[in-house]
Image 1: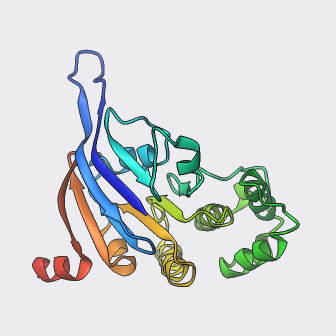
Image 2: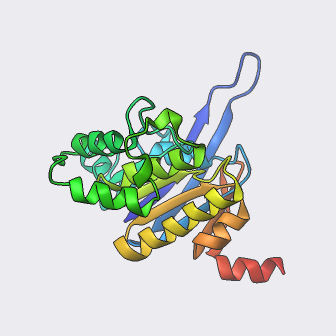
Image 3: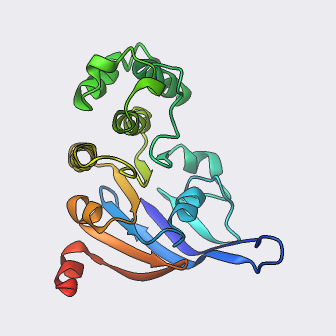
Length: 232
């Protein structure tokens, strides 16, 4: 479903500083229905990689294929295959209610709100947001905002879901709820998910496979089970 080949991205350094190579020749693939963890410290290149997958940043070199569609040559069809949640809760409108956010973003993807009304109600129920359906997003707790952001990505019916630090800044309970929801989404809907995090506990709880990156390079690509055995 996702294939990345020799991806590179360098940013110009600040005044008087050398350029920064954020992504340095990364290659990997993700089969349909897998929840992959992209693990690494801050500045490892995780977010830059996800933003290149979203088409928000153009790579200096390399190729990105989403369900067989190459991002540079077939940008619009490739982007139609995916949805993303960046920085936890950035993909929602603060002054729309939870329900209005779901209706609005479904419509952006070409889905009539009337046709997805039942689905929207189901997402609100499943994400424990039903009693907040008519509350503006800016008045929700951070955990609720991040659950709403994930629901917004799902209501688009995209095959690929990209989640950049979806549990960042959450309390233990909210983080646990989101981890459980992600596992259910992959199990029930067969979504292909890439989840970036710097927290090994998040990867351990949600993913079967993890790619560890540091300084823009892949350090290892293995099953979570094998890595936990190695750490022991």
